Amino acid sequence: MRLPPLQLVSGECSPFASTEYVPYVFQVLAQMLNLHTTVPDQYRSLLPFLLTPAGWQQKGSVPGLVKLLRAFLARDAGQMVVAGQVASVLAVAQQRLIPSKVNDSWGFELLHGVVATVKPWVSLFLYFGIWVDGESVFD
Image 1: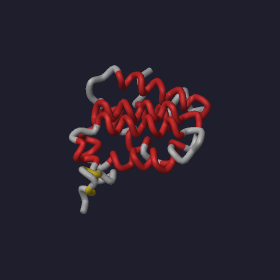
Image 2 (image 1 turned 90 degrees about the vertical axis):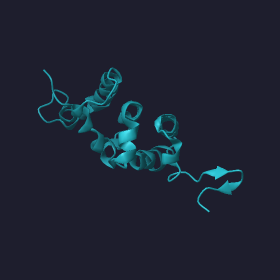
Image 3 (image 1 turned 30 degrees about the vertical axis):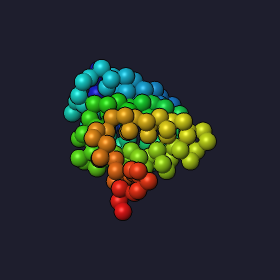
């Protein structure tokens, strides 16, 4: 049985309709996406859902969601920059993960994924206060 990734997560016609399996679905999807060199269209429909607060409310889903977002970044960071989705990824790290004592390590892992994959780094200047030789780039 082949279902698009979003249907696996949302429960539409899914054998994983129970929320107890959702964290595992994210982990499996991350592993499957890691097997690709680019992001297949079936996975692209999942990305907007991953960037909404609703997906991050279940604590058990955080590790799988971080791994899945890192897989997206590793394969499609340029397109995510163009689409403005990197700001949403950074917002997840800043607002949902890093302030949490339980999930702060996942927030830093996600942040590392952004910094390691978004090229050129100039794309990140908008989001980070970049200092060069003691002077702010934005002054």
